[in-house]
Amino acid sequence: MKSTSITATLDSDDAPKLTQDDFERARFRIGFKDVSREEWQEPALARLNESQKISIMLDQDVIVWLNTQTDARDYQTLINAALREAMQHQSLEALLRRVIREELTRN
Image 1: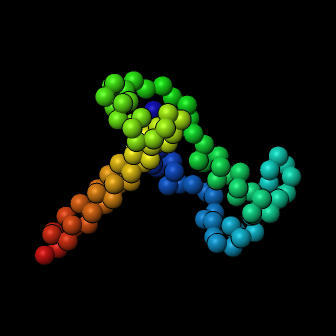
Image 2 (image 1 turned 180 degrees about the horizontal axis):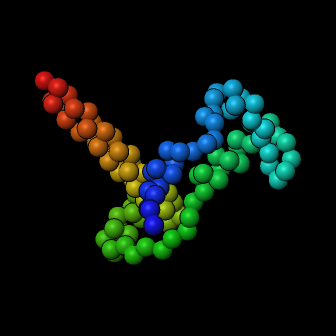
């Protein structure tokens, strides 16, 4: 039996390539009801930005520090902002490292 890789299967896709015109003709729907792009965007963006409830264990000194930075209700927002900044910094750092490596290999 001949095996087929996923990549080979994806490369042989018969679907036509989408163009900008295709996207401009798109119909936006919520619950099978046609809506404007603006009406569709708000819940779509909200869905992308939904928070997920998790439980984490934090060291006592971290909790004490968090409580000095904000009131007891907003520490989760502070943690989220710190993690988002770390996430974005890591992406930026990886990109910069790649670009510098490429430039060094060219010279």
